[in-house]
Amino acid sequence: MLDTWKRTLDFMLADLTPKLEAARRAVGEPVKDGKALAEAKRLLAEAEFNSEFVEHGKGVHNVFYAADLLQRVNATANRVMTLLGKSPITLPRENVIRGGYCATLCHSQAGVVFKPEVKFDKRVSVPHQKHFNQYGAVCTDCHSPDTHKAVTITAQGCQACHHSATNDKCTTCHAAQAGLYAATLETALPVKQAPNIMAGKVDCVGCHDFTKKHSVAAQAEKCTQCHDKGYRDMVAMWQEQVGGAQKAAKAALEKGEAALASAKKVRRDPAAASDLLAGARKDYDLVVKAKGLHNPDLAEAILTESKKAAERAVALLQK
Image (cartoon, rainbow, N blue to C red; front, side, top):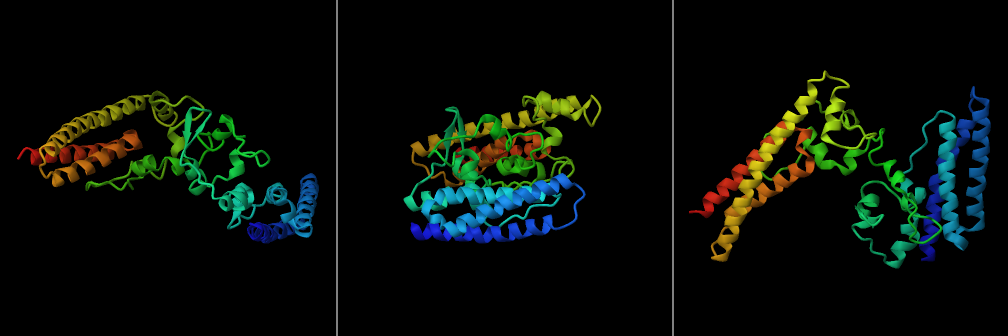
């Protein structure tokens, strides 16, 4: 464990070196805003002191305090660059320095197994593993670096990443919706896919107003910010289009799955029908998850193929 601590602190220090060098260069350049430059110099001095303190004080003597200080060095160096109108350098292992060091210094050493999902506020299921494996979150984004297991994130804090008016990472969580919108879904059944006509031109916040309670009515109202009032009715029309196809596909699936269950009871070999129904169910569930309004025509096409596959399965089972 001691070796891991030392290696981790060493690479954190090494990774921060180019950030500090960039900050030094930045404060050495002419800047019109004297106050910003003075504050940047003060912050740089603080960052350099903390970095040297960890290096010369041998951080393994108090490894989490050392890691916390290096996290502060990282944030301070970023602040220096921002104050001077420059973009901060992004490091290859930024997440470890930014607050993921808990997992490296302790959790991995102790063999901690993280639950795929955890409850937040006793009511919301949070995909815990995905937050740090896929979404770029780090331990200290949600947990206290000082009190073990303490959750410090609030519902308002969650909103900083989820459903904020300026959010540009919607597809990180809403991959199915994005796939339907852009026609990049991987369907089980062959379907000719075409993107929504707005794909590539209108982003998520172009249609979703996260300052209001989410609803189809709110989306319809959002349309009128760019289009005339008649577009409100188009949303209802799309909803009816997708809803009708979804209802028909669901009925066909339920009939097919009931027939399949009956066939299995009499020990018939329903392999072909079973495969058809599995593909139909997968695609049906995919559209339900993706919310058909993101691409009504494609949603209808997928649901239609799902319905046809379920009907073919029933025909096979009735032979």
